[in-house]
Length: 385
Image (tube, rainbow, N blue to C red; front, side, top):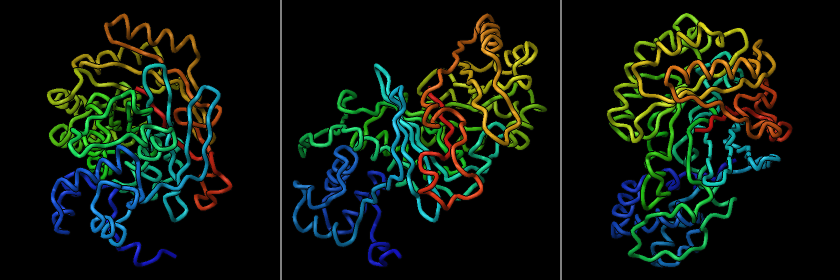
């Protein structure tokens, strides 16, 4: 049972800089204390207030009494033969989420979750089969990045000067890119996602550029427009079908926001985006959306939207009733798109031996409470951009 005194403490992990500064003012502290606190938490990954040595003793005592940094609790930690690392994280009440780190020669990409489960229920997505439990808080979202940096040994003991401008060097961090492509639909948990993004971008936080943070959506049009105005970052859209009839089946959200509305929202977003293209994700389903005619329709669908197409070989799972397109079919499909002048890539599967690849089922979807028994075996939609 949670200690009532602890539950009443202010959770700092999900507070933006303005929130930390406001809290310091409320406690009679100078505003710069909020910036110091943010750097301790998000640049040195410190959760022990007594270790924050350049904070005044009285301020540290107040933090110990009235605040907390809730460290994500890891249920399991698995590393793939290709170096991909996956953490299963307990978020309480029998629910768990997954976070995946994908190392490459010149960058490290972290895939974070925004919901426990997902309500969008795309036909090819195993997360949807588990149902929707709840939205994650901003602290639970940004906590995945905090945890990954700490466990990966990133810059945890570098000195911080009081006059530090807060900028973070990429070579000091193992995580250089963040993609909101784990469990859940980020734009259906908009406020928490927005706060997490802002903390990741803040120079006193993680110092990531807008081009290095990607939010993926299945097409929540009103929230795409809000994100464009509030905090535009790189955008990926889970497309998966070139016409409304097929997309209605594969991505039920299309019945509310059909392709014409979605493409218009993409064009509007580009006016504010840090990149001059939208990434469209397209899972390759054998005999469903991979014919030459589908390729022609797809070319027509995205023709007016500067974009990159990312083709994803489907990872089959029980209950889907779907199969992966053959390798030659994927190559032919990609060639047709490329011949039409569309930048097209075929995603390389990463982490499939630890159930961390895109859309892999891993876990008992009928019982989310037996976390210990399914550690390392719950679901993630892993998309790498």
